[in-house]
Structures are given as structure tokens and as C-alpha cells.
Amino acid sequence: MRFEENFATRVSRLKASEIRELLKLLDQPGILSFAGGIPDPALFPTQAFGQAFTDALEGNAQALQYSVSEGYLPLREWIVSEMARNGVTCSVDNIMITSGSQQALDYLGKLFLSPGDTALVGWPTYLGSLAAFNAYEPAFDQLSINGNRAAEDHQSKAAAAGGQVKFAYLSADFANPTGETVDRQGREGVLQLADALDCAVIEDAAYQSLRYDGAPVPPILALEQAQKGSIEACRTIYCGSFSKTLSPGLRVGWVVAATPVIKQLVLMKQAADLHSATINQMAIHRVAEGGFDAHVAGVRDVYRRRRDAMLQALDRFMPKGVRWTKPEGGMFVWVTLPAELDGADLLARSLETEKVAFVPGRAFFADGSGGNSIRLSFSCADETMIAEGMARLGRLITAAKVG
Ligand code: PMP
Image (cartoon, rainbow, N blue to C red; front, side, top):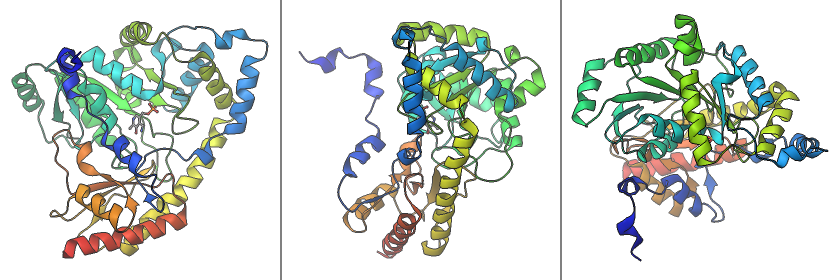
């Protein structure tokens, strides 16, 4: 059978993640990799999880049973209090557990986007958000944080693409790939734009707990709730995740939103995978209750030192004409190369000569621009490796500039 001829039209828009393809190349010996944006497994609370799984199973076959689509109630209760600490007042009815926040992005794409509708995303944005939304055949338009584009401008562009603006998606804290944070004014600007467009705001909070310095900025959902009172009046949909704090492999994340949104998401989850793994939710709940703050403080200490090492080494080794972000948290530094250099070419050269890996920036742009940028991740490299890697990268860029 010629399967390709029978695939749905949306399939033509799916493509293998450049990052996943790249990660396959990195098993070669001697490569110093700053490519994968994944947590350091040495920081996972393995012992606590060992105990939590044992306890969850002890005399309790329910841990292996089907469970409700909304998610494990004690975990949703824990999230209610965690959200309260971040300035959001909600109840368990405003929360659904997802299989990682990636699933939330897929469901939200499915919930809002008819073919031809517009999603506002950053230029650059999280690659996984483009992949998730793309399956629903949208158009992408650039979300400008500083309010330099009027709502009417977005509206007429969306109409020309055959639909309307359905949401603005952003990661306001230590974004992937830039590491940048949107300040309070920027967040309020996004809310204002969304009010004018009457569209949702999808707040991706995957890295929110990983702040190393500077004062926390309230989540967009908290700012909106401060304006409008009840969460039921809010257009912001908050996507949280335990992947960067406790474990990505257990695939546990959550959505906080007004109940009409949660109700639809629950129907989607019933249709897609019924519920996230029961025992994983129980284990996450036990480990979170047993000392979330202390564990995350330890994780932050390690990543803070790595972030510092990377910024120092970039200062020391990068030639003139190269710029980079100074993230206050997260896992990434975003490097802008001189305009004539291309990140993908540089990577090809690097794998041959200097054996340093990173992600070329273009993949993070919905319009394929951004060729002269690269993403560096500091989460899985120790300080010595970071210094050595940045020295090699500096040499590589200096040589590329010359010839
Ligand atoms: N959002 C962002 C910005 C991410 O970087 C990631 C993972 N790299 C995710 C969402 C998805 O994470 P998960 O599904 O593990 O919660």
C-alpha cells in the first residue's frame, strides 16, 4: 500500500524535530554537547521516588488501576496550594493533570485551532509548541511583547490567512530557547492585546520554578486574576510541569484554567489517553509533599553555578560582534552571531573540527528566519566542560568570521 497517498493533509506539516535528529549525532565520542535542553538526571530525586512508588503500591492495587481523567485528586489539591503561592486562586475544578505540559499544548491546539486560524507565538519560540500547534493547520503570526503591533494589524493578517487569532502562546519565565523573561509590563501588554483580540493566552510555565536570581514576576494568570477577580473571568490558560523540577520521564504536568476550558480538555483526554499514569501521579504527589521546595532549591544551586560558568566563559572567549542573553533562570543562553554567519553551517563545522554541539536557531522561528543564532544549554554540563566548550566555540566563531 502507498500509505503516503492516504495520509490526512495535516500530516504534510509534521516534520521530525531538528533537535531530535541532532541528538542522534551526539553519541560520537569526544563531543561536548550543549544541545539537549534536558534536565541533569543526576539531580532527579531517585531515592525519594523509589520510596514513593513502594508506598503507593503498598496494599493499594488502585495505584495500578484506571483513574479519573481530571487527575489524581490529592495531586490537584497540592497544585491548588502551589498556585496560591504564585498568586493564583483556583480550585481543583480548575485543574487537569496532563502527560507533561507537551500534551497540554497539543490539546490546546486541538481545542482552539481550526485550519487557517492564527496562533501568535514568539519569534523565536519553543520548538515543541510549533510542532504541537502545526498539526491543527494554523497560520503563525509574531507575538510582539512590547505592544508595537496593534490588534487590528493581527486581525487583518489572520483574516487574510482564512481565520481569526485564537490565542497568544508564550513562556514568560526563562523561555526556551532564549532564556529571557517577560517583565510585568510586558505581561500586562500581552493581556491587553489578548483583551483587544478577544483571544486566549497560553502561559507555558515549564521553567518557572528555576529562578536563580532577580525578583520573581507574577504569572500572567495571577496578573489577570488581580484585574478580573475570579479565575472564571480569566482568558489565560496556565500550563505547569514537573519535568524540570522532579522528573520529565514520569510525564506529569497540569493545566489551570476557567472551568469551561477544563471541561473540554477532560473530554479530549478521555478520547486520547483516558488519564495520565495513576501511579506516576501518586508518586509525584508523594515526592512533592515530602519536600518540593528543598529539592528544587538544590536543583537551582547546581544550575545557577552552571549558568554563571557559561556567562563568564562567553565573556572570556567570544569574539566581538557576538551577543548573548543573560538569563535569570532556566537552562538556556541564546547567542546571536554576526549577520553573515549561519548557525547550521557553524554546527556542521563544529562537529568536524571543535566537537562542540548546540542547536542552530532557525528551527525556533515559525517563518524560518533567525539563521544567525544558536541555542546553548548549560543544564547537563559541569563547569569545567562549560569552560572548555565555550573556549572551543569562541575559536570556531572567530575562525568562521575570518574565513
Ligand atoms: N514547554 C517548554 C518551554 C519546554 O521547554 C518543554 C520541554 N522541553 C515543554 C513545554 C514540555 O515539557 P513536558 O512535556 O516535559 O512538561
